[in-house]
Image (tube, rainbow, N blue to C red; front, side, top):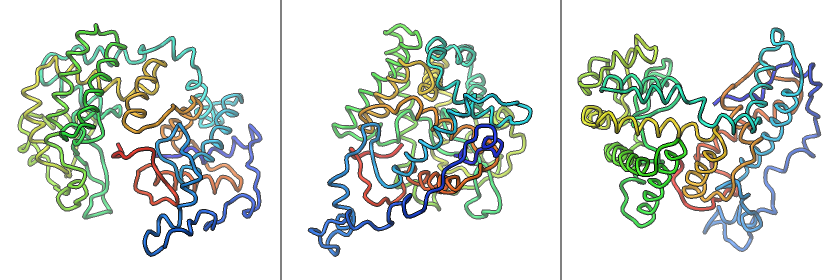
Length: 404
C-alpha cells in the first residue's frame, strides 16, 4: 500500500495548502496517559487491563468500525487531512502538463464523489470483463481468464505475485499462494459450529443477491451460488489453517518452473506467465504445494459453466465497493455487518479517500509543512494497525473474528 500523503510541492503553490504547524505539546497527546490506567487491577495479574482499563471503559467503538484503538485515532486524523487535500485539489484548475500528479489526485477524488454518474453507470464499466467470462468454452479459456483477472488485481482461484525471497532478502521472486475464497479463510467453510454454519448460509444468500443485482434470474442466481460455494469449499479444504500459515519453513518451497509444472501437469504455467506478462519467471516460492495439487484437479474437473459463475462472482465481489449503491449496501451488509459486526458504512468521502490513498500511491513529491511528516508517520502506524498485527494501547473489538 502506498500513500498519497506526500503530495506534490506544486499543490502547495497552486492551492495555497500548507499545514499549520502547532507546538507538539498542544498537538500530541502524552505518550503515557495516567487517565487510561485502571488502578483497581493489579498489574501483575493483568497488565493490559491495568494499563488500558479506564480507556476501554469510557470509550465506545464508532459505528463505522468493528475495532478501535490508538492507531485508529491516528488514521482518522490522517483521513481528515487527506480529505482536505483531495477535495481542494479536485476544485483547483491546474495545467496537466505542469502538474499531472496534482490533476490525478483531484480527478480521482472528483470521480469517486460523482454519485450521480456512478448510479447511472451501475455495472457498465465491467461489461467488457463480463463478456470475456461469458465467452469461456474450455479449460484453456478458463486459464486465460484467470490470468487476465490476476493482471487487473483480482486473485481468483489462487494468489500470485512477487515478494522477497525469505532466504535471500536481496532478491524478489515469484510467489504462488493458496487463495480463491470469498470468505476470510478455510475455517469459514470447514468448521461445524453453529456460528460458522450460519455464516455459510448467509454467504450463499449474499452471493445469490449479488448475482441477481447483476441481472441473473433468481433461480439461476441461487443455483450458481451453490456451485460457487461448492468450488470454494474444495479450495478451502485444500488450504492450510491460519496456524499452519505462520510456519515460515513449511511455507517456503522454492522451485523452478519445470518442477512447478510437474506439480500441476494440467495447468499450463507458460501460458499463464505469458498472459500476466512474466515470460521469464525464474524461481517460484510455492507456499502450499498440496493446495496447487488440488487446484490442478479442480481445474480439469470443474465444468466451464461453473467456472463462469465463479469468475463472475469474484469479479463483482472485488469491485462491489466501487459500484452503485445497491452493490455497495449488499457488500457492506455481509462483509462488514455480518462478518465484522460493523454497524454502519463509512461516508462516501472517507471511502474515496481511503481508496485513493491505496490506489494512486505517492502521487508526487512530499508537500512542505510540519504536518506532512506527522501525517506520514501516522499513515505508516495505521498500516500496521490495519494488518491486525499491531499491539494497540487500549484497542478493543466489537466482536471476535478472524481478520480477512
